[in-house]
Image (cartoon, rainbow, N blue to C red; front, top):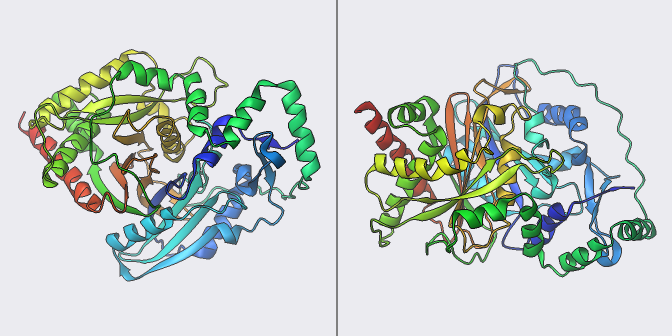
Length: 464
């Protein structure tokens, strides 16, 4: 019997519409080695590693009448070259051109008749660089132990590890009759799911997602954290198209650690404080009314210890009010540290070093789980999602090419104009800002302000 999508995974298929693509992405920049790093090498690498992610050869098939959730089946027409694509910028390609390409690619929905992922090799970058852009539907990331294609293509050495590629033969595609028969069997064994399936088929998906996340404590945690709606913000608008803008910011991990050492808290607190300062300046640049009590509520998913090892999803959503009305950067940091300390003292949150050990290069999976958590909440509860996931502090390679930077692309939740992903890697901290094209026409301005806010905090550390 084919694997059936969980209620949560199916919800992300139903949640997707013409304005809200439900895929998570990443942009990795590589330094091209003397031996080269081209499309053929990338295709060969992906083919060798596909056995590590068998879901990437499977597609979603709906049960006739939608009497049960969809199932995963092997794609008999699987073609790796359909999923691994190439693009190029006019030489010498710069960051702005790359970010425009990322925005265009992320705006396009994935083809639901095929396995739900794509990879693009981007050539033509200046300074002997190549970029790899990944897109994976959130329905495929079903737990903290899941692997994403961007993870398995990376090695800790310039010499790729050897994989024994098993001969893959797709299982026969089940007939419509077989799909219905299997669904009836499941309904008999679990009759309560019939009501849930009908509700999902009617696109009442927000209730389904909230129901599932409630099991993991995420909604309950949110209610405990904030009993009142999020403050009004230009970050909460009606999204009318799938078109996006993408920008990045960079920092050095040692600089953030120096701020933490000077003022206390955690590196994550420093990141949120830096974003608070950037969002403050961004609001002021737009002529928004900013007073001493102005806040922007961020949903900051954190990996947690779960009493149930089989629950699969170990990410809870915590809400923190960023003190954008506070002009003093040190006071902003103390406010954030105080707000986050309560989550840490709950005994659930997992330390950064433990996250790195979860499944090798874990950021793609954890950013996806953070985005899934965001989609379970009403837009009235938060203004912006911020996923901050630590990565390994050693260089990684793909087919001998050293990865120099990695930027997350976190999808927008319903009626959310901005999503921010943060990943630390090999001494750097990389911010990916994904914004609605109309509502966030100045997302590049905000990215610049993030770097300026980090510098402001560094100045307080050196003077302390």
